[in-house]
Amino acid sequence: MTKIYLDNAATTPLSNEVIDAMIETMKINFGNPSSTHSFGQEAKILIENVRRQVADYLHVSPAEIIFTSCGTESNNMIIKSCVEHLGVERIISSPLEHKCVSESILDMKSRKGVEVAYIRPNEKGDIDLSKLEDLLKSSDKKTLVSLMHANNEIGNLIDLKKVAEICKENNALFHSDTVQTMAHMTLDFSDIPVDFASCSAHKFHGPKGIGFAFIRKASGLKGIITGGPQERSLRAGTENVAGIAGLGKALELSLKNMEEYSSHMQNIKKYTVERLSEQIPGVKFNGRSSELNNSLYTVVSVLLPFKNPLIGLQLDMKGIAVSQGSACSSGASKPSMVMMMVLSEEEMDHCTPLRVSFSHLTTKNEIDALVDALKEISKDFVIENTNVEHR
Ligand code: PLP
Image (cartoon, rainbow, N blue to C red; front, side, top):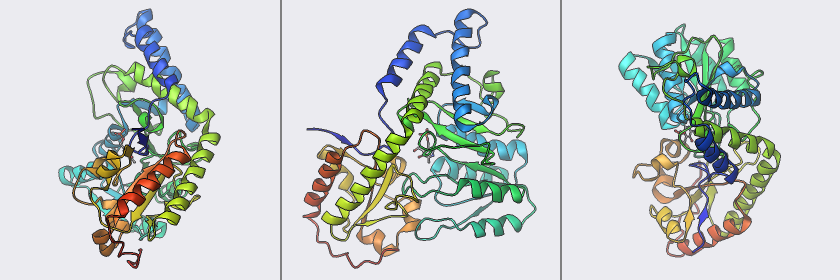
């Protein structure tokens, strides 16, 4: 059975060049970067070269890039340190955030008594920025705003620059979970006054277990993992040198091919929306995910017009990997918070959400196979829900 991978928002396959770069690093640069001898110093130089490469991509200083183990760690570190070390007393966020953000916020609420305000998105998954402004103006408490750049389930994007400017005008700190957009889009942080951002290499054909946090210079942020001077004492622990080499190679390939890859995925996304609309009567798309300009080109969030909680399993048995929500909530019986925000109760009762996510390797033939499989599966269901009103 040919296997088809359409779950690239969960993780992406490693590029061969990335694997080669990592193997070479493991063989040659095995020294501990903290050692003063040449073995250690060669590993240290490799790390600093990748840090410079990341900094150039974001138009920031290398000192503002801290390597971590993943997006989850970066987001935890930023949110928790903002409260514990920068005196943040209030956090404004939205119910659309990834759990590593929302649970860090809840942890700060329960352990540190931080006040939390959520901006409820509309049924398209958009955040009303006038509500953000109103909330910011309503209190003098030191505030952190945490809003993700692109949503991992429905692909909605926020206007990062506009949000950052609103935060600056109102003296608030701004953190954005940029895990789904780093290396997929050009990001110029010399122009966008964001204070903190996060990245995870496995979302752009790099390895798992490596990411970084962008921490604006002089912010005063501190680490939550202590016990060593690595990463300017912001993240103690011997560095994942091979992972950093892999991140660097993956970033290099993404930036070199960004135009080609993004236009390929835009085409695939358009094709997916068209084919599903033609072949599955009553199909709908969640959030802004069917819009080419207003959403992440890697993600389409589909709403099938019948209830089938086993759809992910059935597609998997046909060799097709997709996600029912995000990877983290796909095994759960409860619908994700994002789906609860963008679907009506009727839709939740009668329809099935499915996330299809692409990479530059995705082909139209694979999309055809997905559409055929969905048509086949949908034959067993009475499509009685074409009249269910989409929010
Ligand atoms: N934030 C978003 C938006 C994500 O999609 C993910 C991964 O699914 C994460 C954070 C967590 O990243 P990591 O898997 O590197 O911990």
